[in-house]
Length: 269
Image (cartoon, rainbow, N blue to C red):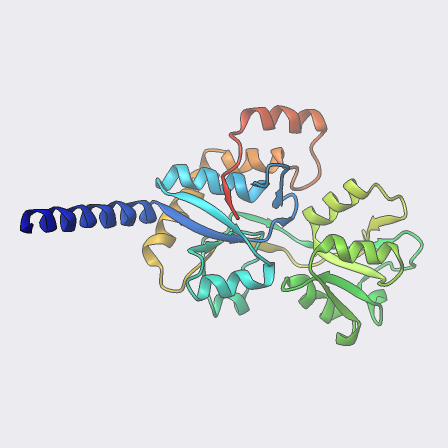
């Protein structure tokens, strides 16, 4: 009987050890898959996009699998802060406000925001947005930007940037502020000739980073080194072309690049 008990205890210890090893090789990333071209859901319910491919490339660099868990954008930083996620990868701008709650990797991409308007709106510059109704996605810096150009009671939050643009189509808001790559993707998909990006309105450059728990020095060092390697070997540039982040490459270039780049990471729902 004692030998049997000892065997059972030994087996349990092995199982616990194996489980711990499996857990150590997997990192959970919070993401909001409603922000193409950075992340969205495909027909197989997988997260796809620039950030998904980036996560797959980082996984290969660090020897740990990054698994996505879908959530709302405004809950990602809190989830990382409280330990629900090991990281947040979701087109997250690095801001001082967010840095008070989480650490960030080195920047992996930069861009700015844009204002989507109707062609006949008469909006020509940032000053002409004063007093206008502006929509943006909840929890994003688009809300903060909108509050700098119009009154706070004229800023409207939406679960998705696309929802805001649909209200713009319906005349419920006068403009939508979102990240430029997202604005370009929405306009391309809607193919609505009455909507344009306001060329006379520009905003500051922002930088995307991966949100990490405060004090996660070892993990940050690994993620930073991986991002640097992917910048140096041209992987990130290739992903920019594949997902047409800046909206400048032709369809032929995008198709050729996509064929040369490995597909996305797996999503966990």
